[in-house]
Image (cartoon, rainbow, N blue to C red; front, side):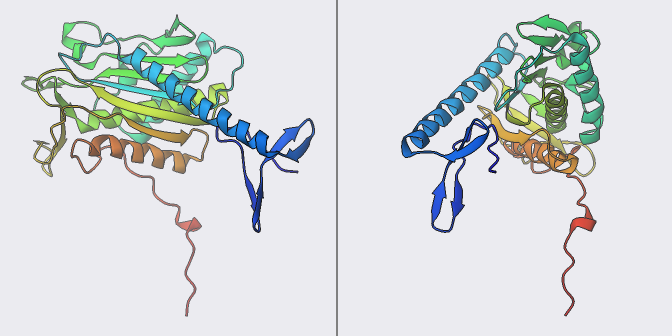
Length: 299
């Protein structure tokens, strides 16, 4: 029997010698598609991909709307399951469990070397929204506005994170709204992927499409800051950005811990590299399991 998994990447082709075929489920049997069926499946595939892209576009636009990006840069990150598995709606308790699980998991990727958006939302009282639960901002007041954050967990397993990331507080005041610390980006990436991991468990999803952008509409170009060997802020290698191009990726939320951790690292690396920053400060790649490495034959 040939197993045909649910996927937007159909039809699934099987090669044997110089021939290939496309299997399709017919009740309890599996048969081979005719040419017109293959054509129809490819049309459906392209349509599903277009729909998935439109959904990510909509999630991103919703999360970015209304942010004061003329005053400080905002990080917007969204994740949508490629093939949503709809079932009973998440309850408030289930959404609280997703937030609690993500709060613990994110610290295994990135410690508290900077501000985690998930620690600045009301994780214990998510509020109902349109087919979602919303963890509202808990950084209230003018003095805490620099770390404002919002998180949503959608009924289809999607998650969104919106967090003020420019103009952070420093010892002698605040940075400019266009100045973004690379470690703050790492913390937001860590939170996003931790939420994806836990939302996938709760909604029975696996593959997710990710998008992370930084919205800034002020006059100065965006600058991503890192630190030098002495721990002091350094922008000598930074690339001034008049527009931050959203970073996209696809990740399997149900893959083994080590593989998922590596995706967290690689996605964060892409996000800071765009601003001329080479190295991550908080997220380390997982150590490889030496027991799985092949031992070379001795001559």
